[in-house]
Amino acid sequence: MELAESACKILIEKAPIMREYFSLRINEEAQLEALPAILPQHYPCSTHLPMYILRLATEVDWESEVECFETFCRETAKFYALTSVLEIESLPQRHNWLIEHVLYPSFKRYLLPPNHLKQQLYELTNLSQLYKVFERC
Image 1 (cartoon, rainbow, N blue to C red):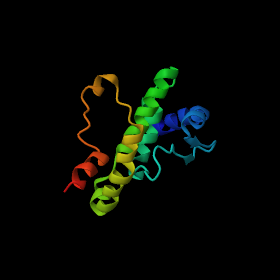
Image 2: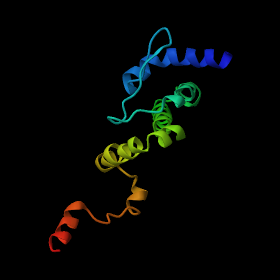
Image 3: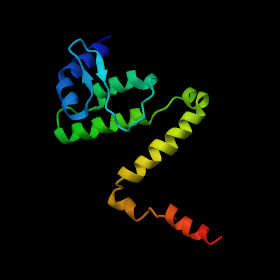
Image 4: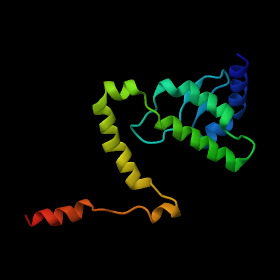
């Protein structure tokens, strides 16, 4: 119980920072009101929410501004990346739709790979080039 109380105390204390910079809202009664909206139509798996909340209290470096942003974003990214096996098995169409219509378009629009990866990524083709090739057929 000590860990939960300590985590709760930290998160209530840091609630204004999380609200202002990350759109994560925790009220004075320690109730979660809102999570960051990372991508439209993409919602994290709620089974991982308790661990996410705990990791915000224990793994985020609240002392350094740069480290705070980096560690908070890393923990939030991990939370949004996790899915439950049951969710994938029970709703494979939803999972495939999410990948095709939400994640891939977002990668295309927002992904900014670090410089060391830019040399490793190659465009194999694009839709307009494929249309040109198949128009001749």
